[in-house]
Image (cartoon, rainbow, N blue to C red; front, side):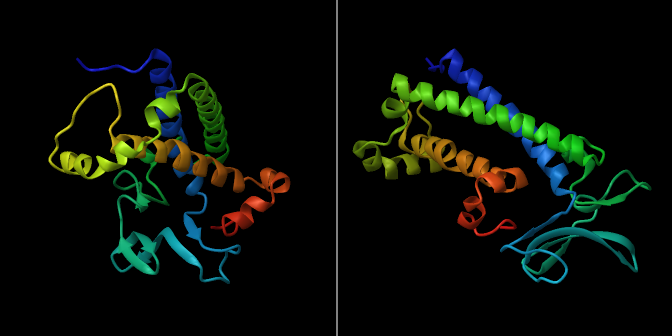
Length: 215
């Protein structure tokens, strides 16, 4: 018998999955406005702190797309930098099939991105409060000493593709669940807020805490 999560747990998780899907694809559209990442507080042509960039350039073989990571350039024509239907290729960071909307529209992408960001944040807070009240976090997600003792065995079982479906989460599941819910998702929300000029005026310390606006 396979245990199924409660209806509300499944609902919130599906809401998170859908929200993350739209946030990812709209985020790629927003990224296309300037497909570069920097380290520090400054950016621009006068600085050399670019760590990631997608672009296109003219070559003897015609326009080519490239991706540059820490100064190392790779030809990514057809996927990143230069993509589109044969004969109608254009210079763009991520291809049209990977962005929402598929055509370049920064305003619409921002609306979609922030709409689902608030849905994600709200449902996450509701889930967190409810899980604290009903004891779900303490009972099911917090690793215990016995869990840590079983960690090597859990790793070995997963490496051998031996999975045991029970009511309780194993140690790796608890660690993965906790890492996503209490580290990655909050970090994603905080870094997203730090990129908002309006939030910078309300919480100016966020940029300094994260190593600068460009970081």
